[in-house]
Image (cartoon, rainbow, N blue to C red; front, side, top):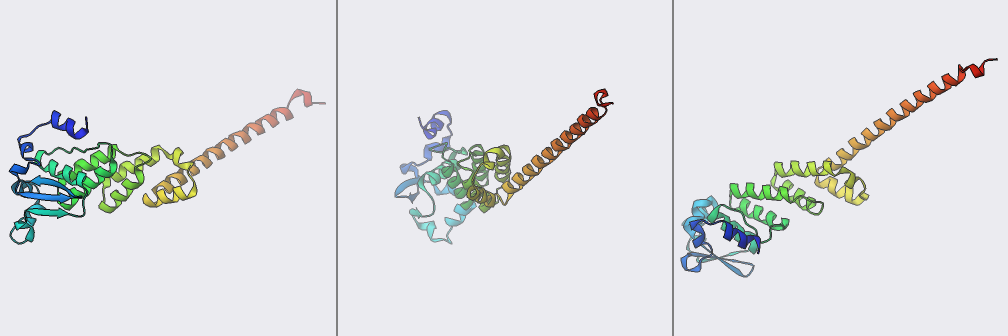
Length: 221
């Protein structure tokens, strides 16, 4: 069962009976050649952007079909669904690019709570494979919580990144605003300090050994 179908089973609100319901809709969105049915009154209540769009000042106020060109179908559908039930459900709950697209939708339509939900979901999706994409999103939209979690992930996995080649290190360091490089420098400094301390202790031990040999009774004539 998909995460979307499971959510429909586990969670219900009355507004969901109107979600993507062609008989009850008064606006149709075309996204990636697919259709999403919605209700203007609900969208206007939830988003000031939709409220402005459907006001008499904009041409969309009289349109029955609106084509969405800058969003992907699954992300836009999840966004509209969220506006009906206040629950973020993705067709693929492990797809970080979908979660990122939903954040972008939330940002476009000024859905603050959806942006918060998307950011929390993205934080749980941080991996070695997703970190670069997420750094780009965090930079583009100034996502401080996500950025902090990404920085923490680098720190936790510093040993892994220290074995990367120069090109990979440079790329991730640039994305992290040199945070990775700073961590590596600190780690190397700490390693040097540990080695210096070890060398100093070994030198003291050698001096003590030489002193014991020098003053040994066997060395007396």
